[in-house]
Image 1 (cartoon, rainbow, N blue to C red):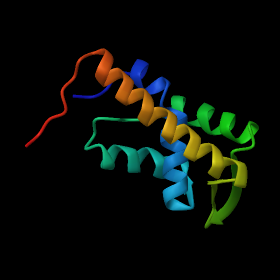
Image 2: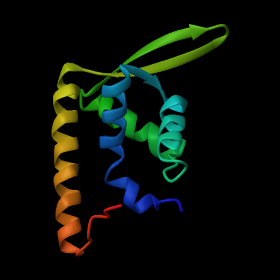
Image 3: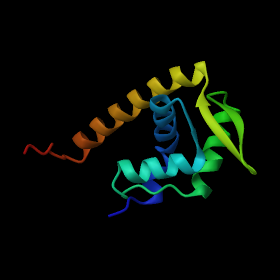
Image 4: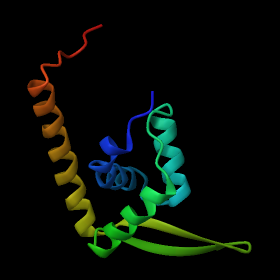
Length: 113
């Protein structure tokens, strides 16, 4: 089961910020593949969703970029700025609290196995 793009829309910035916090620097395709792998294909981020998000995070000053030349190819790496590191903690905390609120609101019981 893949999650809808509607569900992902509100969490994509948080996902990207957290990945960058955990991995120092990443390029776009690497981000999509890491999310796909970590979620066992349940979350698949398209380029059409990822790059506007990265550009928005860069415009907000949360992400910085660095270009590397690999043979004839140019690869753009993204990493967190100092402000981005602080924002990541805020966004992860906010999302965790939101998920707890949704569990309560929807009366979802935590699985115990």
